[in-house]
Length: 269
Image (cartoon, rainbow, N blue to C red; front, top):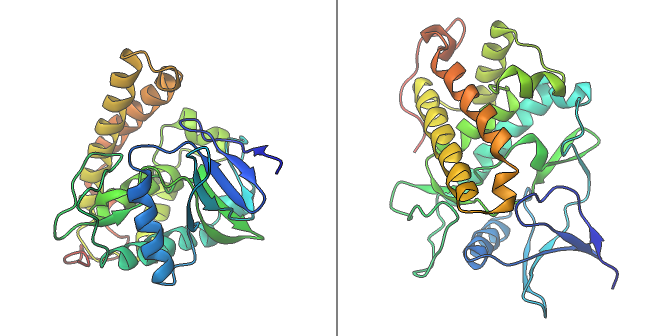
């Protein structure tokens, strides 16, 4: 059967074979497949289905049909609109609620290296615009589940806020069509969390963003220094991400407060 190289996949690459996507297996692939099977059993529709491995040892996933933004430059207006942002927030909430009941196998291996423990759930951790699949303005789901790992809700919301609000530095956000308007970024940040149904102190997302930036930048630079070509090519992204973290750290306290409302209580467990 003919293989079609899919765009993106900077770290691991992917090809389409009929109605499946196949990619080289990684140490964590079997564990991620157990998460995807849990989501399938739970009736969660926004993720590919795990179908095991092919004769070459590559993972087999169902193909999510639809439109992806990838790295196309300026996004269509509708992708930058409020409805798309609300759909992302609602998708994250459904995912987290579905993975609260997941329990990993004893030999689980995760991309992040973080072990599961009670109180954590499984997050996608890369639910960014370049991994979203759309069908006529409706969010089908997200692809590229390699980074799925135990996390808090805040950890997943942090990276999605960076990409979708966006809270990335202007050199990254402006080519996609966003302006560096603090009031608009604040409005979109709280719209995302409202769509999720987040009821915690939203400064927790600030802390999670700074932690995520620090971890990502450190990992990219460490692997690049070790000679990995993929991560050497990502050094400019690491520098932009680091600048984004500095800017997020400098945002005033009122940015993290929902406009017109008091700071709310604890986040959902």
